[in-house]
Length: 136
Image 1 (cartoon, rainbow, N blue to C red):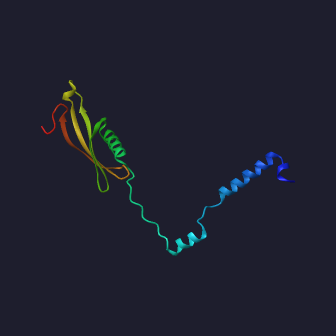
Image 2: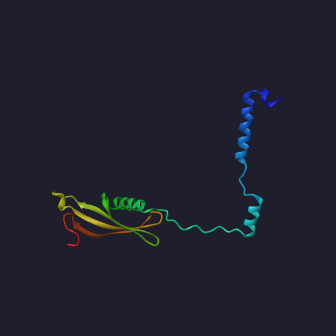
Image 3: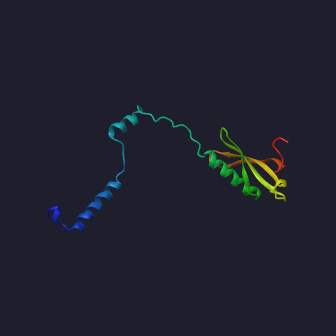
């Protein structure tokens, strides 16, 4: 029976079956390309190492680590530096709320993260009143 005369549903079923079989086949390189690769004539160029974490994500993760360890919300990011094996970030935290706000006691924590955002170290580097000026 010619394909035009077969019921439409049967033709659809066959088309689906062919599509499924196409998806099941493993994708391989063309023979000549595969042979060249196996003989060592074609080498993959090393890709430049790209950090798994960009600056914005590093700062966010550092703030979350400080919040989790101190129990205090991060006020802001004071510094951010890309290191050889990760990131060094300064996070500012309100340690004591006072009235007026200008007398709040703040602290700065230095956080080191590896390339994947895991905490390598953290320490409080400074405590100061909110109202104090820079370098005073």
